[in-house]
Image (cartoon, rainbow, N blue to C red; front, side, top):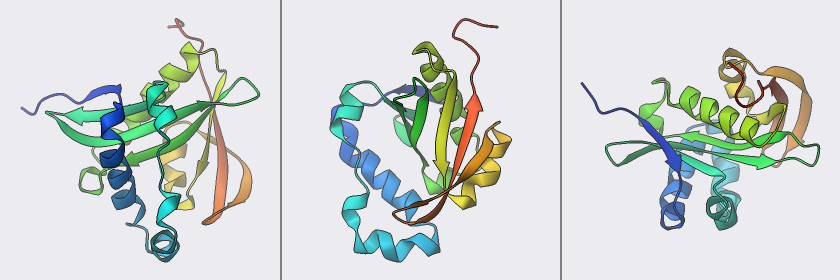
Length: 157
């Protein structure tokens, strides 16, 4: 039986490894590959997000499987600013674990909802995780879908 997946706060010394994980995951989508390769600086995990405890890593036996970043929004809610899973580990429930941690983290800060700007390819994943479509917008890499999920207050069962 494999070791359990642990979700923990990222450490500053992991920044480069997490950015490379993000790069591998992002380059899997052909329609974004050319733009990402032309703008390698677009993949950036600000050290402040790690130092503030806003970046969470999914790990098993020391292997980084994925990570997420949750930021505060000016409206008091939370933004899932990044969710990336190692491509060789897709479809194993790691993304769902990271979403669940993002929800717990956001609710503990008093957010009533978690928002995300989803890649259209990930729309089904986010819908399956309980997010609702709110609209479309343009991002640096094309069309994005604004989605929102209502959160249960921290401590509610």
